[in-house]
Length: 303
Image (tube, rainbow, N blue to C red; front, side, top):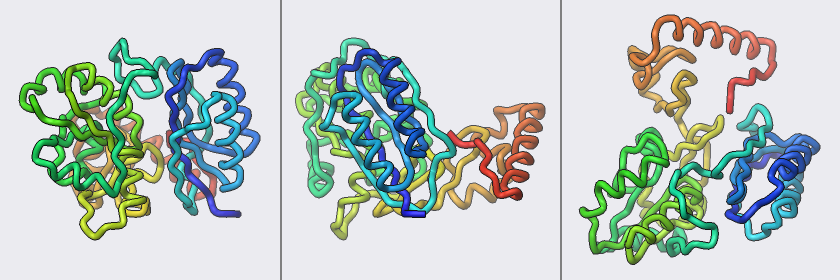
């Protein structure tokens, strides 16, 4: 088999006839044996797909035509293992849930900063750097000195900002996330909240890890991704983290030695949050997964 490609993409653009577009997108992906997850909403498209390199390229071009958006944000990496078990195309209210009304596709967003300029922005004493990701993502890696809002999900960020904004009055704000899509909304939100200068790491952490070639990287740890790869390191190489399939939190290698860790059943993050009946259900599922693995078959346990 040819090398596989993983393509993460998003585009904010006004879409209509979404049900019809969903059918076109899904059919294109299935026709070319593409796996992954794509989300469609009135505000655009967001997703990650994988498959044979040429097939992924063909599907990306088809997607551009379907949504009539050719300036799509695209990040690609070559791999030898497909990180998805199946293909899903979902319709949602937002392509990334933020929950703030009044943000428009046409609203001004933050000033894009390329990876090779990001370190300089972060070191500016008049700039505060914010990590917009969820707390469990930040736990395995972030930029040195970045502020962690410790949010459970992205929709919690607006409340966090409104409670803490006075601490950063008069400062410029530099924001980053995994691939850039969350910052498309959070930077617009901060500008509407009155922040005069807002920066946005173009392409997010993944773009930085792939393109920053200096010897003084400001990134520490690994970057969580929402697929079977779990985490990525420099040059987007496979990271060392695994996933707790009970709570979906990333686990570092030393977490696997914790007394509360049981493969497929629990980890230190969720052990006390599930009763014995639930744990037994997870154990049964784990048995089924192992049986499939022994047979050389794929169990649809992932995303």
